[in-house]
Image (spheres, rainbow over the protein chains, first blue to last red):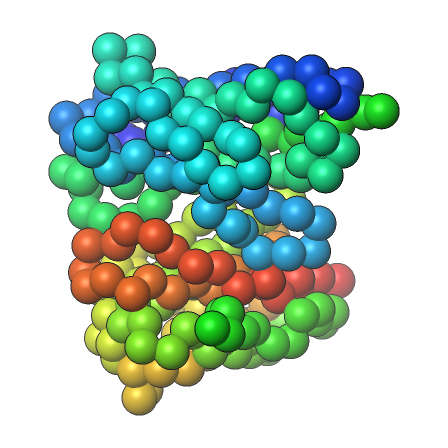
Length: 114
Length: 115
């Protein structure tokens, strides 16, 4: 069955430090990959997506992610975080062989400390 | 461009009561989704509409949940009767493409508490 695993439920980090949020998914022939961010009391906002092409994807707010097919991973990175990046981040996958619905991970809360 | 609208934002009910949520998608978006997000978990798809037809409702608990999108625009999601485990945030999303989704746009959600 298709599944998405976010290995860290919470990631604390100091302001201006780099951060990586990890995402792995169950093996599949073809996938679309997404990262969404959710600020308190708000809906989900798309950060970036991978559909095809270059495996390094750049998104909004200085975030980027790299698709690694052999490791079935799509980790999210930012070289220098700000207090305003404090939010919950969700990795989501469309497993093409199972239709077109998004399967979400459990989320990672990023806490940026000053 | 206006985003996805949802109401109410918060709802508190007793178990065994009924409740309804409303969603207005982005204008022109043919595909509409309802998700359930339980605290500490990622959103889980309940139902997907393409215009006013149901594409996927395999994870909708049909004994108590129902949803409709009669004119292919607004949608309502109903729970009758509610159980304690229905406490969650209910998210509505819409998508401008056809059956194959690409980018989904989410509303702010309705937080349901069942006492």
